[in-house]
Length: 316
Image (cartoon, rainbow, N blue to C red):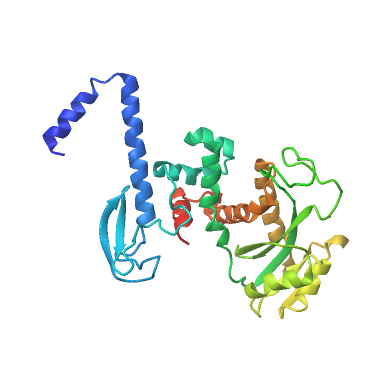
């Protein structure tokens, strides 16, 4: 647009009623937010990416669509953009995606997301789990130095499921029918080292075999593993080829020199308190919430940049 035409357009804005000026301002804000989301999505993408469908390198630019650079593969003749093959592919309202990333940063419930972004609850739910599909895969690949491990338990939940539950529905999270540990509890193993590298595993059962299977890949031979001396953890540690330092919490012993499990217990306490706001999490989505919390806990002051969360939702 030429300078003279721009000046004429700006001049007409002063003649608009206040409510119409607000509408124009909202539209401009949405357009700017959409452009910002597009910049985040395309950042880091190669100028000539490989075809995500056939892996060919015979790629040419093929115009723009929806603000995103489009490419065409000369080998398979398919077109694609930066979102093709990602969890956010085919989602609409890109102008609100940074707002969704801010909602994840703030740990908002679905109802709060609906009010903030003015979207339907089904949309808020779909966005949440699409945004969390990749973060839930990001966790420590190796623990360094002194590592700590402990179990947590979450009530098995069929939240959102209408049929085939086999029991009366619980309200707002509810409570187990039996006290203590039972088949109603879902075990989660937390492993964490002293510099903050963390891994979580949703277990089918707390057995030495299952614990050994998930811990072996992330524990180098020179790692010192601290546990609370639980039967399954102790049995697993004997076959992990690492030094094991159990701390007998049942006898009131919490620290023995450098050996303790206070780091992993503090992380578990933060996780449990953060989860309370959701009033029960469906077991099939539990790994997503664990990944969400890890992303928050990795950031300084528990407040990651929404731009980073949006980028993490597209590619690891």
